[in-house]
Image (cartoon, rainbow, N blue to C red; front, top):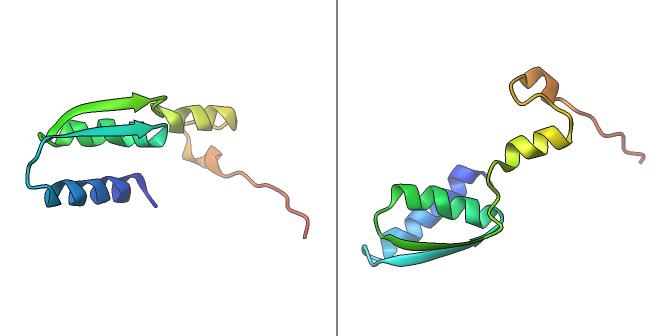
Amino acid sequence: MTVSSQINIIFNLLDQLNDKKVCLIGSSMGGYLATLVAQKRDEIAAIYLMAPGFNFFERWMRSLQLDYNNEASWTISVPIFH
């Protein structure tokens, strides 16, 4: 599931509420998604974030010692015995 597909799911749920004001609650990746949705939808009255996953992709790339700006470095392999 992609970030954009998750955002679309949230948008579809908000559409069913007929412009009622809502508070989004999100933890980790959910907190990140809540901030993205809140930037685009006026019916978001508040957001409650618990350890939101801001910049998670860049941090993940650094932890794998990959160059965020060089896609050629993104290819990694993990040997698996089977």
